[in-house]
Image (cartoon, rainbow, N blue to C red; front, side, top):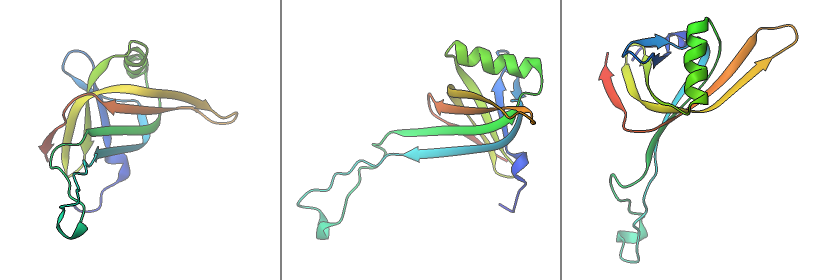
Length: 136
């Protein structure tokens, strides 16, 4: 994958009709995918090297971002999903790579405002099921 502009990483939320809409004016976004290792090392392990059990650990994805609310519709989608504890369908569009889609729940929503600046928000999402990937 060649170098890409960071602003092209896009976070989208299903509006309840199967239509994915861009979430607010995201300025920074980060997607992390993790898998816990399950150590099965024993006294019989070859040469004392650690052994891991394949496909046994917990896998999860987290998304974090900072942005500006851009319109009443996207503001309402995020606010409603958070206050209702909704597990919603989200997409993360990674340019020239593909689209990751999964169910996520908003785990944190913070608002921040400086005296001489715009109101911003921080958003954190936790995966609530398997991820699907569609290549670009």
